[in-house]
Length: 439
Image 1 (cartoon, rainbow, N blue to C red):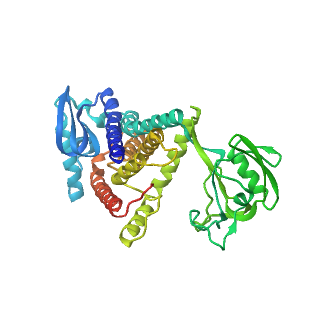
Image 2: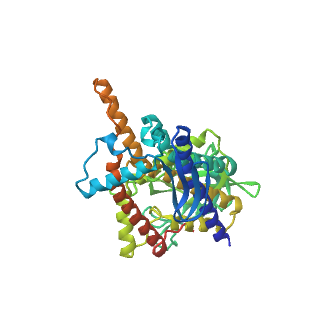
Image 3: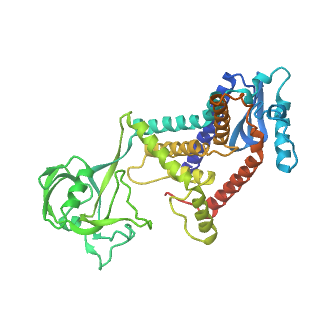
């Protein structure tokens, strides 16, 4: 039941995100006088619709997107010099111009989208992605301010029985060949709160790990609070090859993608985590960092698609960093909602769902900015090109050029649509036959 609830929550928030994305386009378009004839969430057959004013609002059967129809998206042939349609590409562009012109009512040519200035076009086309960014910001603010984010404490969560080499699976079982871990040998137990290490009072887990890494091979007194009483112990961290971490806490990789290691003190303990509310000023920073990380994923999308094909049809297990589609998102939502274990309650599950949905909206924000039609970024690029041409003409004292013939991009838009459709089907198939799990 919990699994189903998680999936339903994800679907509802996803549909709301799509609806608000289209609102981000529709509201400024109407504000600038453009007639918006249709506002729909979903594709395919219409399930429900109602006309209010000059706009038909409705829901369609396939909830994988949405659209608003802005009248006059393409300039008519007369405005772009009546280009000939000698090839199938030209005919596609011509058909798009004619269909766009038919939507313009007599006497309303001034309300066509192509008539807008470049800044207004940018506002309209960026309105959708920016709405997704705002949704992500709000969801992350709810998580960070209301539920808090996982923070390492000075209380021990686990105490390893052996030293596992840096390149091995850290969850594997200890063997007789493994060196005993110094933390367990010294008598440390899960639940101990570290109060002092050497001569230093401990205030944070980062402070403690720095001290441990620097004291390899040295016998060091450690004081822990165990059930309300201070216990004095002595530990001697072993010197072992441990991963090097950057400022964000991520392992540093070399040119071959291998984890960089260095000799450092190792005790064999991990920290217990608790969720702590964060200052409101940290929300923009976290959103910015995650947006940048999402951009990095989108930039490497072709390579990730190749990896997905290889793992899906080659029988390999997908990594946890693999891209996922709508089925994968639903699976993640179900797994988060059905998590069980000590310390896992409804608030932790809800925070996890909201954080995942915030990441999804960041992905929608970044993906829609790719400068290819029919994505919003393609329309943004066309508007910038049109505005750039006019500015160059103005600076050179030339006549103001007419609107850019965006209908020429229709064949490219069809090609991109086919590629995106194929990618979507691949993701659905991969998420069904070789899913990524987080449980």
